[in-house]
Image (cartoon, rainbow, N blue to C red):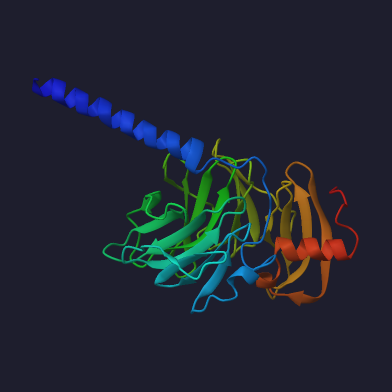
Length: 301
């Protein structure tokens, strides 16, 4: 076999292998479940099956409480309900900056940094196959960079990463099931909260310096400010494509929360007699307040 034939054969085999990997990830490993549910990933529901587990670290429970992860900066141990024997996740010398279970399946997303390089890694952790490699690596970052937050669309398999690259400086990267990873340039570096619709590649974030909320279309690439005139920060989105934004006062405290939809507008759904820290305001807390006040079904106008 001549040199050209050997090169051509290697190329074809490489493409076939890569295509097989992408097909597996897109159709099996990261394929969405039939029913999307919004469930707490911390301590919602019955977690008594893990009461016997001892150890230091933050506890994270999978959506159906089949697994519990005990996470420290340097370790991730996953326990199956009713078992005291941990599944130890190999961090490959890196440290953990982010961990969260996905809301509709027993797979976790983990942000890693450090080790022998300045790369950061977004790792997908499957307790049933903990040695499986399904990582996204981001290179060419400033020293000490780390994943600060993640927003993922479970139906489209698109993941947005908020990476801290300095004091109050962040970058956004987007990846999908095919590991097509790229930086998305935003109209801010002091980025606050991030969110994405579960079934559409529409990404939301706020500028913590100017108090504006933006929407970015991941498919078409366009962006726009979506909040009404005034100072607003992003609270989050829900499974019904409602967007929650918080109105801020001059002291950077929340005075009210509005809910709305793209192309429709926003309506105030909660007000605070005492201005509140943004860190205390979440979609879940607003939904609970709305339910308690009997206005959870109010339409947005």
